[in-house]
Amino acid sequence: MLMTKERLPAIRTLRGWAISVLQDAGAIRECEDHGWMRDRADPHARERAFAIARQDPPSGVSPEAAAAAIAEVLDSIGDTCPECPPPD
Ligand SMILES: [Zn+2]
Image (cartoon, rainbow, N blue to C red; front, side, top):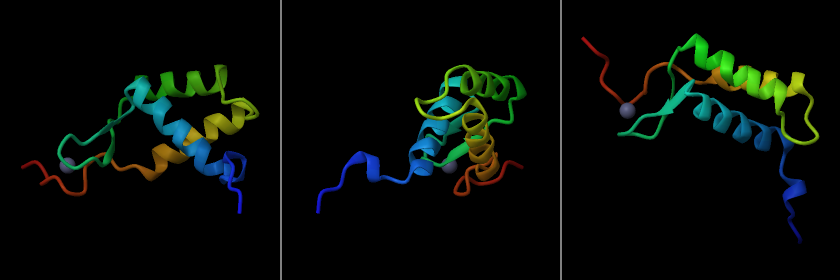
């Protein structure tokens, strides 16, 4: 059976795009030790990510849907790495 990129669930692709935008904007960062995404809780970086989403959404995606994907990723990412020891 032929599997093409078009058959991938759109939400998965959009989520991957949102994560890369958030990383570019500096809103999230990968834990260097464990590879988990962490929310940096930086409101300015979040603003930048939302601005990018609205101004330059992926082709075929509305600015509203792109911004919603950014919000969804932020919702799903914690501000600490689950494997790092909590700071004292
Ligand atoms: Zn970690």
